[in-house]
Image (tube, rainbow, N blue to C red; front, side, top):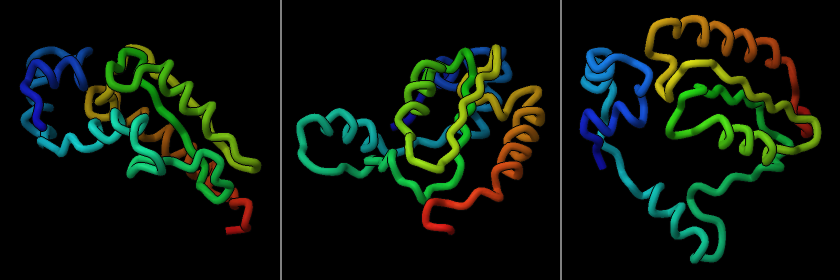
Length: 135
């Protein structure tokens, strides 16, 4: 599945200019399998764990930071907030932060360094955390 430049702009770069969006499209767009979309639709009809299944209560996972663009059309803030609520394992860290005015492709546009620096600082701050099994 591929996207045309207009679909790309709606999905990933809706807050950028047409020129910026097209430049990002030419640099980053790669057609990919639509299987994950079809699998998620069929998950309600097929028993058992699907390929995208997640163990939300895994106590041995690393700290998890969800970063949301307030203008994201693919993973809106409400969806990310819901995701955070699912990751509930004793002793784990899960946080969510929203960046105003940002689309889905927020780490490619102007000011991306601020987001990247913050994410790195957050990861380093939480790097000392061990999992429930002591790893």
